[in-house]
Length: 625
Image 1: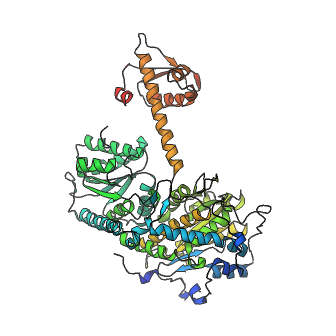
Image 2: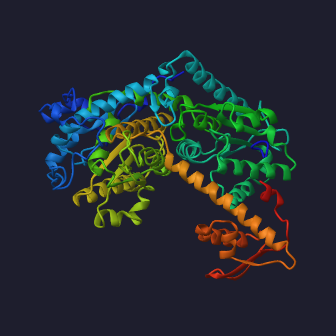
Image 3: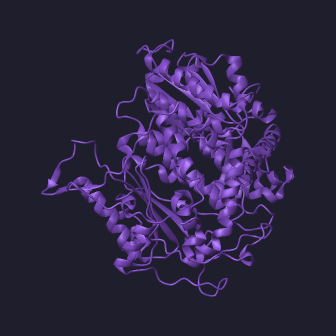
């Protein structure tokens, strides 16, 4: 197959903290005038000795553990309500401009832990500074990691990259405006303009745009969006069927950094077939988001697609939401992408702070380390108490697990690191797995995501005297937090004033930085994914074996009479007896999908199966591929 076709707004005053209950302003850290320490060691009231600094060449070992491990112990969490309040006040982080809070008071880290983590924290801060300057942060691939430059192009290490970032943003804004206004329109649309978006991508090319769409898209967006994020034929058919006649009014965005991702390629080919079947010209409605000169980029250029936007080599998929990957579909839905970038930039600035109490990402990373003992032995359950943040847990699942789930550390030691993330939303999960979280196996900590604003001003009403629907949601969150903590289940709470583009941008940036800092603490590369590549390679080997099986069956079926083959015979003629189980699964899959393959016998008794093709020389194109 020759081609795959085969400027920042000022901070809003509304973002300032306005926690009010019956017109009484609650106490804030800014009112308490807490003394900010200069380092973690200041908190522990003792300096760290040079003998406790581990050389970077040694594996990152846990510093806080159960009795008997590494000589340190963990007692029960603090339960005294007055002491808990004091701990809450001492450790509450607030970003006034963003209206964002981070509460780590229900994580039981100790002063000894903080003191011993000081050297690692300083190395992590230094690593972040070097990363932002353009150091090679991904040694496996020899590339920079520059997603922080996307929201502050002035940080880019040279003027060429700075100009590319700024030009791409300008093009996204102009293109989106032209599409929404109808200046750019499809040739055969009954509506005379684009009304739908079909986004084709997988992993980081889908999860970020899906999360942002769910969180921020208005009730009646200028263009509604659908996603094809898998190579499931039924799923693809469903999305195309849902579009129906609006396919003629659909802008198709194809997102693939390399241009060769199989799932994305397959989705594109399926959609192009749907366009042909409907008598539509795909090129007049197709947009590519890909690396310059990739297979997809060249295909889109040669075929004359509507537009092409760049993905940069130095931006990974899971950190690409602030690139064209996320900004283009967001802008087309009427989401203020400049505000998203402002929120991310404000958070980036805050997370450069080397004072831990003033750095929310550092607080998160330290809490993750404490809770999972630096070896990932606790899962992180993410519970956003807001329907619009439903997909945050899925987005963080990839960001955290693909970044931190590594077999080897940076020095080549086998460490099998990671941090498992799962979750849904509150209070739905009150009726799902909270029962186990409180009383079952203790292998997790929780991150609560709280949104203070229930509804837009003037839209709330009381279900009963003094109580609104949102009060119930608030009560469920706080009640669950208390119930879990009373049984020694630790938690972090992240609070935003409301779900706005600025707040969502800040959340994305917060967790991107927390992942980077945690990776430094445990001495791993957060910016590659060899396990994903291994899975892709194995999938390719399965498809190659399928073609060999078809070749063998074709040869046997062309005999007179046709020669049915057992699984053992197929494996022998394929010269791969060790793959007989996979051959069975291939036969089972193809027979279930009416692929001109006849299997006699019982799938429940694999050795009874004999297989032949309904006619010889079928699927010649596949056999020759």
